[in-house]
Image (cartoon, rainbow, N blue to C red):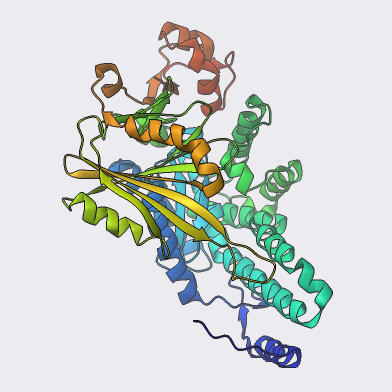
Length: 496
């Protein structure tokens, strides 16, 4: 049984006051101004390490050592011009088709292969990495966390002081979390300015940031505004933001002195490194076709219940009905452990499970062990007005060679029987993948070809027999119109 100390409102108020008084104001590395900061640099670095481990597990790193080294080199050459050059920075490419770049606390910078396909020069990637370095330099994430902590602390104390506020405290705490989920507009403006500074000081043409923004805007328009590129959803792009960047670029600060070497763009250098980049979803890591999930690299398949949605990452496959009332998660681990013992280990993920059924049962010639559990789930500590909910969980561990595939299936006890047929159908359909056409499925890639004469992009693609279904995508990733003229020997990214 847990014991809790109840603090009266006066004591809480004193503690809150002392906390604020004792907080040391940190000097912001960029502005030089003092600001309240609850997150130390060591805390930032530790959080960054933990986030890095989670991202590697969830998405995986893109398997191209040369390209990863190239990105790291560009990033590290920007570091001496930042406001926190003493940090140990890490630059990585995440193996996902979404178009995004972001910074974790403590100097961890990520760009996705999806965004790399959108860029067209070394100067563009320098401004993107510079922007993310700007977030780190200005400690934007640490400042957001500090604000969130103070708001949450204030809400908790206010809840103790006022019965009326107590009634809305849960809603307020959720709102506070959502409020600080993204960087503020001023943070984005500042990161843009810093990204331009760092790229310019390294010798890159910072105007390439505008070209990058224009490509993202065009991508948004082709999607009808239905789905923003991920970079825009986490870094909102407004006409005013583009205007501010253009105004900055026209200031004296970014004019070269006489006889200075020209600013670098390095389009050809970048495109050469990009040649062969996987584009879009990589079917080798799993894909859905005709209601079946296929995984060529791991050599398995299983059926998807009709109407269910699928989310596939390097870590797991998650599927469930659109109403969210059930979920099936598939994970894999290389192990020679006995299936029954392995299942017992999986049960330790749950608090006080009630075991209803355990049995060995083959699935399509593969040894499998199944466990049906009942657990009680509560999102908060019990209160007088809260009731817990019973959930049914089924754990199915299937051995294929030296790997154990585990299906975790769950739904509320009252709903589980309604989903049991779909869950059984998905799990029992698990089998080795033997279809040659699915085993041989290859991803699309970005290849760089050169125009052999002056012609339009449309004529160039037609001459190469590039499928017309890819033409619009190709025009976007090249930041060109289909009728735009190419010069002889001009490099062009194509998707094949």
